[in-house]
Image (cartoon, rainbow, N blue to C red; front, side, top):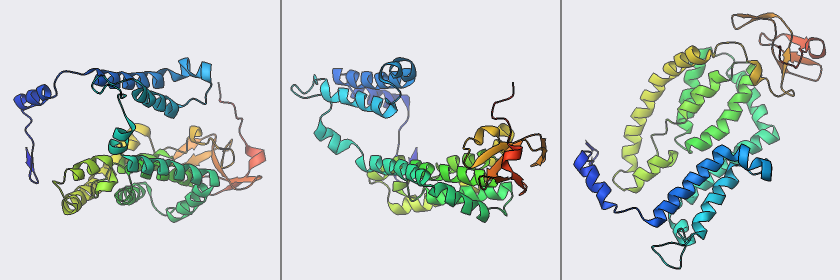
Length: 306
């Protein structure tokens, strides 16, 4: 296989030669594999084994850090007097920049949500997008997210945009899956710049490709992805998840911004006995069709029907 000056031999003989070149499995490799297996096991069993003892405060991040600490404690068989993983090796080979970028994305998303900025921006975006029907809305989201994810990591883009678009869906009383599914998929259309995603950075680090290769080929790929995947995502989302259905009750989970009221009517072509209502004030809320209703008089029972 040949592309842009890179030759890859994928026949069975070459793969066997590469495998034999690795040599026998060392004790250090077994320890590293065991730490990874232990980490995955604790992630799966944490609600049943760890939380009853340590409480719910012991999350997935603490479990992962605990598995990593084991590598700094267990002595190495190949380097006597040292651990399997040393701090100098961690400094040189762990991609700290990517970790900080991902952590910053989580922090920004949490800060926006806690400060109310997500809700405020969601309301503004809901007004700006109010004139778009479903398919043009999906195309707009896929195009915008595809361009944004070229500049930041796809994980940071998702962490920032998903809460924001969830607020947009709540403000418009649109099924949130109509906005969140295309956004999640478009976050993976990171083909143009090396910094867009970790695999791009790994390929760029080989120094076999330059920025021009990424921009030209990635730009074509991104354009085709937007043109082909936008209607495809809309069709599949509607077929599998029924995204054109009225705003679901499970998404109306914040009593400060959404109330589930006993108001019959027609919502997005469906007849309903109850529906979501966007809270405007302590006394009133707005239905999908824009009607303001008395919140206290129409609030539905909070318990699920039997």
